[in-house]
Length: 138
Image 1 (cartoon, rainbow, N blue to C red):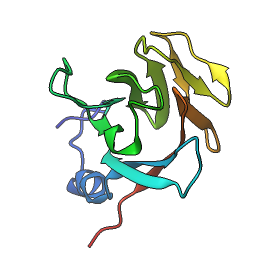
Image 2: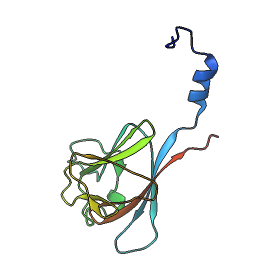
Image 3: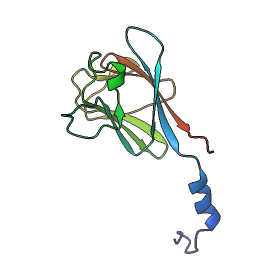
């Protein structure tokens, strides 16, 4: 691989990047009727679809909220998408039936919103805290 200066990149540059632990998206899911939050994690990719999986879901779901009583709490089959690019995490409502909110603020479908530390996400009535963490290496 050739750098902008015309020289070759050192092997140590590539090795350092590939040796970094992968990132994971960690969700703390809280049912509106209380109880202990449940934790769900997924390898972070540029785009992750969140919703509830069923036999007639038209696209693959990366983050399935079905085990968290998603149908009864207003989560759509294809509810929202997380976007990760250049160290920034964003969320986009995918025209869900009951909406998506950040800190109580309703999101416009199809528009991306940046997520920050301590933001609280709501999909329908399901409350979710979102974190990005590095996976420890074995």
